[in-house]
Length: 361
Image 1: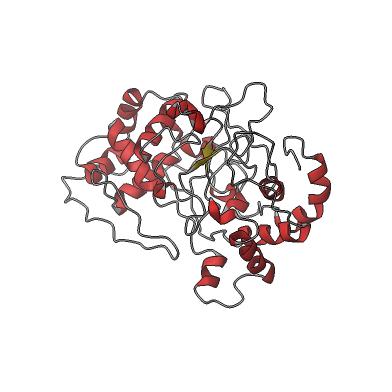
Image 2: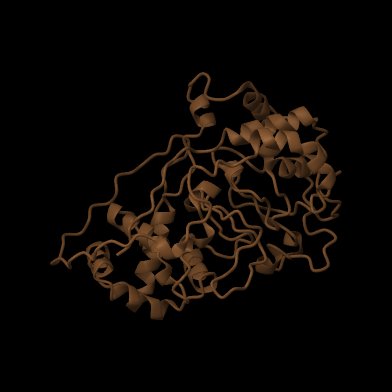
């Protein structure tokens, strides 16, 4: 059994496989854009009272059900566009230098490629940045599920991660003519902490990983995936047992399991237990979606798996010998070839959507 906190042995086996299918294409976008160089648009002239926007037309992703928006925060194109601007605007932070995007980049699977992200005040987080993909479909947020709504998670991250006082930031945003005009059009009033959060949440609900090669294969497109990916999917739902926690169409969504990662640590992270105070939840963390997982190394809440191949090996081996880990985690006896095939299938779950940097007023 491989303890991936000390993955030397696994790396020796993994090297050739990783070269084949665990390298990210950094030519798509720059690794981490300099947030001080975000393009700035000319301020838009304030408009007279505009008619309310019609609701956004419903969009059904190729493999996912329709997104459900809260009754008090329906999506409109203008609200989503406003949220996208706010997402990349460093003026939302306490220092004025860190945007929400500082931890979430599309070419890194809407994570940041780091083990632990720094906060706006310089402190390091103690858990790995989760992906924003399909966040709108979740029912609990953060690794321990302490946020019960996406809007609540956005507000908490605004305060804790980018170190802002929303009551102080909102007037600064409202003072920008281009923003003031948009907030009036979208919300019928000025920028406030509540409307800023709603715009951000509406935008995040568009961050969906769908229309992957595997989705196209299941829709009947011959040749969309490799034979290894097809064999990997058979392992995923069969011998490897992955589907027990990572069921389609999300391949993992708002469930919590102890997979042994805190075993043997001097100060183990209590995980979900800190939220529920239920001993059954000690060391349990949210099951991440595996859609576009190949883009978001490192893996797990503690970032202990530097490559996708090592993450697969850890899970397939049954993990660390924690007596409290889930009974679903057992040694599946997979060969190197089968590990490779599972990786090929997971790579086939990668979406191919495009993203462009918005101009901010």
